[in-house]
Length: 217
Image (cartoon, rainbow, N blue to C red):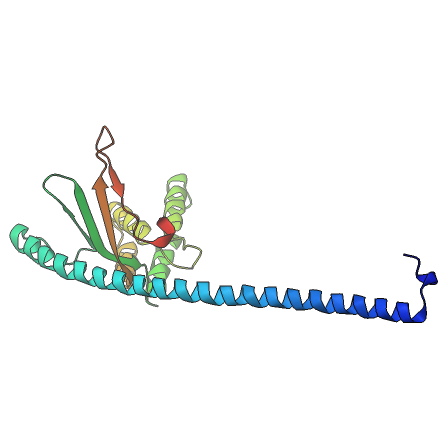
């Protein structure tokens, strides 16, 4: 279209037509955006209701299983004369089809006296002579004393350190280990349940873990 050939009235009409089309296009976009937001609201609200219901049901079942297994744990302790301070318990059906494990997960923790124990060990290290045997011992002890990225000792390394101290049999070292052990204050982070079921389709009858979290499904 050659605009130069249009009259002022035609140009005005064309301009109004273009503006009307632009307004209609903008209105269409706004309606589509609103429809999308409405769909988000409906979808998320429906999902939230389902997940809240699922969470409540899972919590109810978890409490029920812990209560029921509490009776088994008490009976096992009495029958087999075992301690009741285990972090976990496992029960397997007679036909080995189901295996249920439950217990408490813990995070390692230490009170502030742990540093006093570490200082005792440092004092012990300062008494060692500088021969090759002593250097190797110092290296091993420092490795076991090393803290993780969160600035905490590792309980399994402290256990190794205790075993090493028994071999060394030094009063100062043993005192430091005792202080560290007394400073250990593990914190229960959560309760867990794990169910394994025998896979009858597997020729070896391997156990497979049933996913109990949404991320594992």
